Image (cartoon, rainbow, N blue to C red; front, side):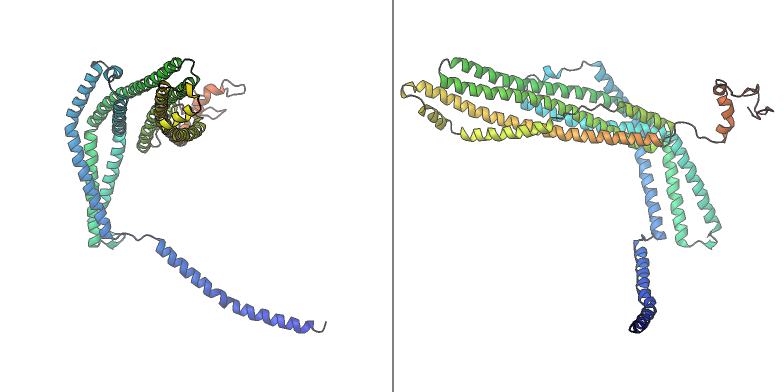
Length: 494
């Protein structure tokens, strides 16, 4: 144990040495860290614009307000004529008979009908955007008086403060510099331009609201008729496609019957009939998918329009009870979505069948070689020129059927994928819109605030409820008389 004393002495000396070095070792990294942190903070802070730049911003705002004022005056000048034209066009639409697209376009081919349908869908999308703008114009006009008056009052108060600064020539006890004066004058000019714009908006508010209503009514009627026409065009396209497929099936059914007892001809005719029957079923399914796609796009356009209008309503009516009522109505008007849950499996089946169909197309690519292969398996006495010719016709027709069926499957696959994407987008949009409505309705007050006036009137308001319960107030003055009459027992003031 004698060696322990020198060891303790050595460890004690080492500890004292390290403790003396520690402050020096730690001071430098901390100082460097604090310096780096201060440098990072100074770099992260955005550079404040100079007084000259702030004055330029105010001048830009004044120019923007002036341009908006000119646009507003132009709109107000054109509004009476546009309102008259819109009302006249609407009257003509309602007075005239609704054209029947099925009769008007009955002579068109499927390709021409599809082109007409695409044009109507494009027009419908443009009109729906214009309808959103018209609704926005109406909402803005309805909520403008309160907002404009508040903005004018705030701007006038700010101008008074700025004029007082200019008059005193000082800011926080210091003399105003030339740059500060230029900034104050630029801000006064911007506020003055804003006040003039708001006053002009208030002066023409009724006219702007009438203009929005005239646009909305005309566009709503156009959209209604366009939607009816798109549905009719899609139905007409479906009927023509189905008629073509049914005619193909009928032709091959007749050929099967004409084949008689010849087994080879009967088998080949039955195979063509099987393909034509599948073509008919694919056409019917494609028609249903096109119809679903059309309805889904219309629902999606309606939700997008509602979403855009909702953003403007929230910005214009934030915190008001009117917004709560509007949100509740929109919540009730949300469409009930009916989604096709079998699309994923159907798409997979179509891809598999199309793969098998392409293999058959490659195998039957040369009709003459295919016929020779069939005849090689028959007895020589059974092979006749008539049989060869009939088999060649059947093989050629089958190649045409396979090509047509492949094109139909391509269209069916595209329609299925499009519907799947549209339904996904529709579901996401509806969910996001519903969440927005719920969130906004949650934060909007449904009753008046619980202020001092409410507390003062609470005894009177609760008197009928209290009297229905045993043990409630029995004071004869409870809820009666003037508010200065006090009951000696309950000390209430009603």
